Amino acid sequence: MLRSVILAASRSAKVERAVGSAPISRDVVRRFVAGTTTDDALRATRELLDDGLTVTLDHLGEDTLNEDQANATRDEYLNLLAALGEQGLSHGAEVSLKLSALGQAFDEERAESNARAICAAAAAVGTTVTLDMEDHTTTDSTLAILARLRKDYPTTGAVLQAYLRRTEQDCRELAGSGSRVRLCKGAYKEPEHVAFQAALDVDKSYVRCMNVLMAGEGYPMLATHDPRLIAIGEDRARWFDRSPDEFEFQMLYGVRPEEQRRLAAAGYTVRVYVPYGTQWYGYLMRRLAERPANMMFFARALTSK
Ligand code: FDA
Image 1 (cartoon, rainbow, N blue to C red):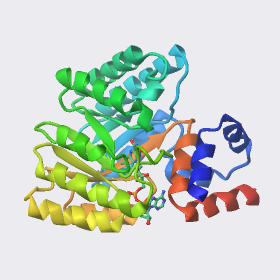
Image 2: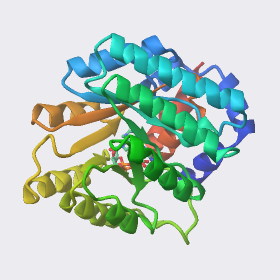
Image 3: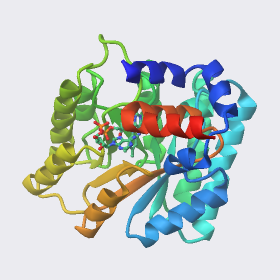
């Protein structure tokens, strides 16, 4: 119930204005967001790489409604990738994109050409791109754009969400050689006819999808903080004889950082999803919805300032 209310608020411009202007402690945002500038993103990347982790960077922003904003997002990614290359960080850091931030809602072709420019810049510095997945109304469009991008940039990856009923089949289609799939549970409020609603059903779907990807020929990226699913991931890696360079675990910046380091110390490849930028509202609300304890942390910070 609380999750539904927070997820509904995450799409409300009115609540965004109220929260954005509230005197929130910077610590609340900083727990999940690396900072607002490119320099903040680069600093966080360097620190994580020094700790033996790898990184994917997300310039925060979504649901862009005009061409100027979409182009500005593209340009920020181009700057970021150039800086990663210049500073020697691109060996361990890739980028994650939301197609809605590049214009998907009003001009799919523009979103694709912006994404293509970012893929080219990533390839130029020896790294790659993963397309985030947003609500289910965008899944077909995002997978179609992925297929076209992969013709020129074969290492481009995508996110699949285990809560969607369609995802096991999507995993089958994307489990081939060269494919990179980030498997997560799913963070949006979705209707029953497209998505499992019970946590147990989502977890079971995650395991079925993981089995398909780990048995396949692509590169599975297991994005979860769930201890049970991580243990099952370790088990499947042994079962399918995948070495640490043949799959990876992924977690969000600020979530279970000790576990991120434990897995890396055990020899696994661990990638941290690092968001940065000023448009943190939607991202932060989805993180709060995942865990009531985070909501209490947020509420205390709002009332104590
Ligand atoms: P679950 O939410 O069940 O959490 C399991 C345990 O992990 C909790 O009991 C708690 O201990 C810990 N935990 C989880 N979330 C926490 C939090 N916010 N704060 C503190 N502890 C927490 N979604 C999407 O729809 N599209 C996308 O493109 C992406 N991309 C993405 C990339 C990466 C790298 C990750 C890790 C996740 C995403 N997600 C996403 C988000 C994903 O769908 C999901 O909402 C979160 O990962 C939380 O689900 P868990 O699998 O962690 O399980």
